[in-house]
Length: 173
Picture 1 (cartoon, rainbow, N blue to C red):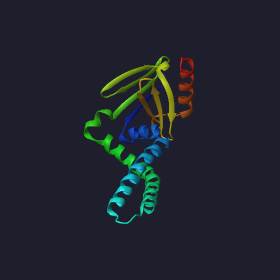
Picture 2 (cartoon, rainbow, N blue to C red; picture 1 turned 60 degrees about the horizontal axis):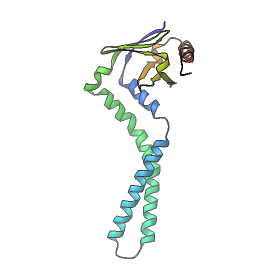
Picture 3 (cartoon, rainbow, N blue to C red; picture 1 turned 45 degrees about the vertical axis):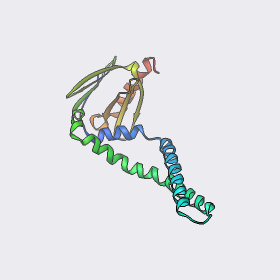
Picture 4 (cartoon, rainbow, N blue to C red; picture 1 turned 30 degrees about the horizontal axis):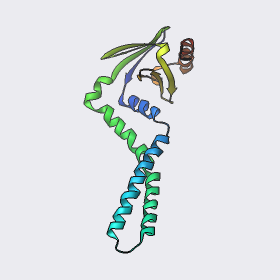
């Protein structure tokens, strides 16, 4: 029964959130919405401030501004998001999430023990496993994400094969 002890830090939660948002398609959809708003507001601001009949130029300027907004906003978000995550998880009211933790991988499921919680989930409830170079994330059907920092694991391949084996024996394989 593998047992891993580690300190959970704001950086661990940041990694969890960044792992969950690796797909940039939602960013592009959001940027498209913001770009449309920028174009509309700019078009009407120019139209209302203009005395001549220059709507084709006004529309062109608005479309150009929308295109720039569409291209720039995702990069702005990608830059700001990790900073906001770290500040969020470093706040005093979130300190209950941090500190010494243990993750036990048993034959029947996984058990997480922290300073303010103890939780057990059967393997059949683990819906996905994902990872980064620094972490392994086990997500359950309930939306819980269990974090296992690789710094707590002496041999990664052992953990991966164990989790794969246990998930393969459940109904979620």
